[in-house]
Image (cartoon, rainbow, N blue to C red; front, side):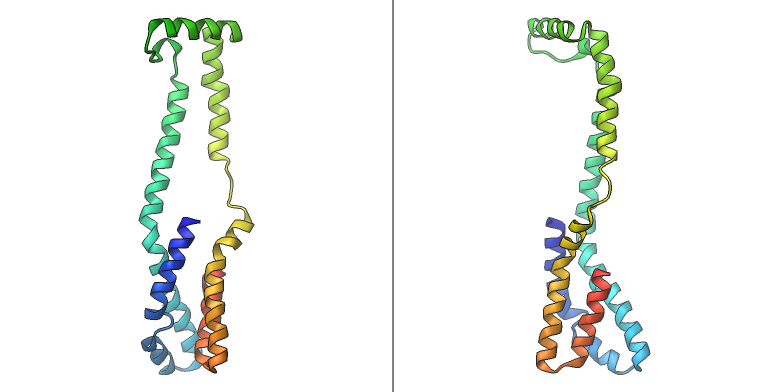
Length: 177
């Protein structure tokens, strides 16, 4: 959600300087209709979408990198966990924990095996098997772009600006398709 909020903000900031700019409109007018559509799609993709999303790429990449490192560290700690090496404030705490582990799991070795194998597999499966983003979230995430460009299309129609209306339709297709 934060990513799309930032991307939508960048979209609103960059739109007047890229896809809805006068220089681009003039450039498109200088070419024939077929070339104009191709140029519009290319320019909107490179100037607008790239500019919008590239502003967020580094923070998202850093977040994902830290998330993967944390997950890998957790899996390593589970795989190498030993009750005897667990840090305890008091030695009596260790004895208390070991006593209860033996009560619940018969012995410490059984408990460690459950941590090393069963718990490790469950966490690995959950962290890797999160799956794809549900389609409804993709649609929800694309709505700010769609609404911004739909609003531009409606305003262009009200103003009688067919060039702007065409650009907003093509930009809507390019940004949500």
